[in-house]
Image 1 (cartoon, rainbow, N blue to C red):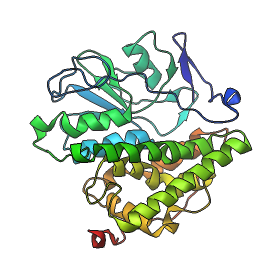
Image 2: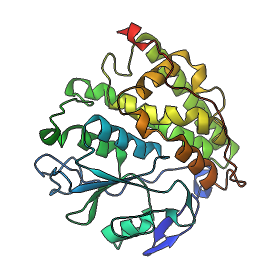
Image 3: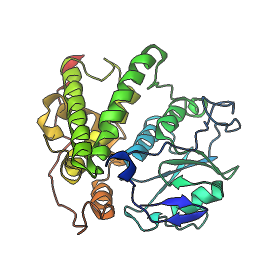
Amino acid sequence: MGLIQNGQWVDQWYDTGASGGEFRRQDSRFRSWVTADGAAGPTGSAGFKAEPGRYHLYVSLACPWAHRTLIFRQMKDLQDLVDVTVVEPLMLANGWELKNDQYNLDYMYQLYLKADREYEGRVTVPVLWDKQTQSIVSNESADIIRMFNSAFNEFTGNDMDYYPVALREQIDTINDRVYDAINNGVYRAGFATTQPAYEEAYYKLFDALDWVEAILSRQRYLAGTQLTEADWRLFTTLIRFDAVYYGHFKANRQRIDDYPAIRNYLRELYQHPGVAQTVNFDHIKRHYYGSHVTINPTQVVPLGPDQDFTLPHNRAQLD
């Protein structure tokens, strides 16, 4: 765990002293977009045209933010258009580690400095890399999944739209609460260094999960009858919850398996074609329990829980 300062890698845990023990995530710094015609997207620079083989995705199989991009790569048939590097599970003194990298780099921070010698800040995944310009297009997962949703449709013929115009306002509203209270909320609970900061995150998290349970008790997906990006953004946190966040991050009021609607919803999403192969619990548990030595100094990785996401679900009855 660390960051780049003055062009050098520094092994430093998150500083929560100035925030009353609250974990605050750094905003993503690379925010350009791949577009069908190379025009500028909502943020960043122009010039990143969708082209087969031009872009490379760096991910961790442990990271929920990176997991979103892998799911969209699968669902939008981009496997032959955007190749992938998977970092090593552990993130220790040198941050994310690379093996057999295309540029013979050993660590992700070296890729960030290759893209921008002046970069300062945290080194995160996912990273969408442009091999043509030798630069980072984006390290913001929310943007990358929207690029994957539409930019390459001309090459794949896959017009499935997970961010349809008619539902965008509703999706954005859902995303805002899910991100703040659940996706980032589990980290705010787990990385809190004071009791008040932990309790604030804890109660906000479970209030939001109760809200999700109520929604999913009356409709199949978060935005209604259509599967959207809002579901996949939530999925990558839910799939890790009982194995990691419940114990490791002290998010232990109840498990996801204790929510009847969310439990069945999670099974349905896991069983969606191509999704199961993006889930790797070995990487997930080894990363969290082995990397966060301030939380788990022994680095012992628990063997449980026993989970079977292939069991039948009842979600079709809500159509």
